[in-house]
Length: 288
Image 1 (tube, rainbow, N blue to C red):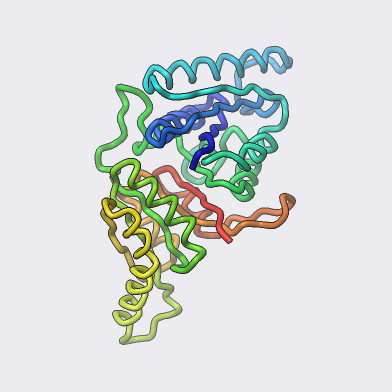
Image 2 (image 1 turned 60 degrees about the vertical axis):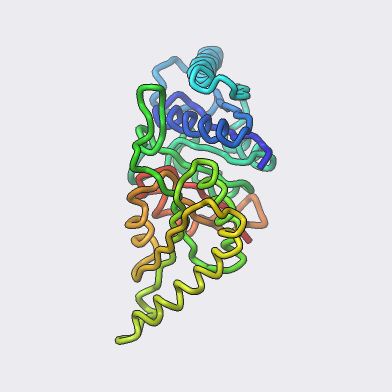
């Protein structure tokens, strides 16, 4: 990864927490940060008049204040700001072609709604060609200042491996890189569907799935020998297995399939469930 970490920033608590997550990620990976504010796509509850010049001033203030806070914490961070008039979704997707990661704020449990206002944020998460991370306000896994460190027990990168084959490679690359960067454990999760079980052979099926998962992890464990790995295979719906496995998560990594057209997008049920219910930042990684 060499492109910038690009953050959608509107001044809401969720977007500010997202900016803090992005700054730490960029500092640890030695990447630049871009703070992006679309003054034509602002939260509905912004307490300002609707005149264009007022919206622009609000955007400049948010960018300057957040940039100053992040640079105070990460003195060697390369950081730029962009105040744009184009729709936020459009600009973020344009940045997605060259960014290492896009970072969006998430309004909280039960909804994904960053500065892109709900359905538009899902549009970006479902279409961007690069990984995108959704971060909630007050997330305990995220440092938000000198006086608000990340919780010490959030020490795992959790990756959901639905298909331990070539489709999992982008997810595993992102997850292993993140774990190596932050000195975290990696928990690779594979759910065994209830419909695949036959009475009396549950253990055999789980053993087979564990072997398949180990085979998928093998080249990445060789590439990242210092990353401790936990193979987590459990029976049940994939979303529920992931949620259970995320108790110590500092980051959850899930996948979605690439789409040939920017007119259509789709997030699978597992990605949807993670974005709505997992209590740590969630990275959605596109794959073939």
